[in-house]
Length: 186
Figure 1: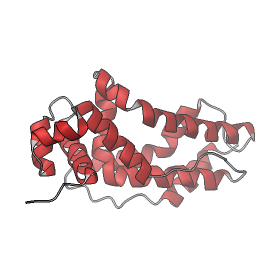
Figure 2: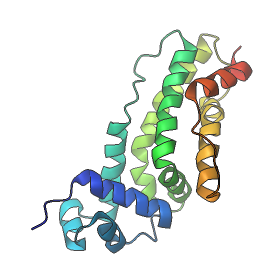
Figure 3: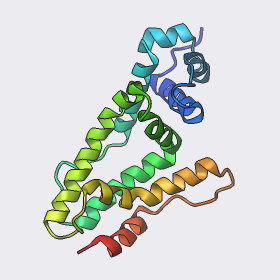
Figure 4: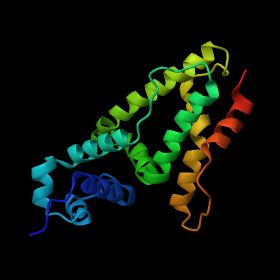
């Protein structure tokens, strides 16, 4: 008899299937097949597709620890922490991130699941505001600053998703921060 499929393998499967098919079109059967388990087992362990996605997203956040509790006085170091986190996230999960961002507007289930990552963005906003108050960054809405900072990472992920021939190397977080600071420091 085959052993129990680890939760992480099921989480990888649900994120891969949703990245390819979208949340609404991703069936629990397709997810179960990708994970190598029975669909009934999927429901017994996770109760619903929404709960499975929620647990998969949580598991990925645990794996991508981002320590933003105490921003320091070094704006470059704090931004490097943020960029490094998102570079890793987009390199490994960029497809599903873009898919879920797109679908959250139309799907209450996806929007509910993304409420937890939104709290992480609020911490990022606090770091940006800290450095704006110190005079180290241009004052603008913090989310504008955030998107300007990670925009190059998102675009690389998007380009690889829509252009199978795209050959961009992964972004160098240090170079991204350096270029960003040239245009956003006060």
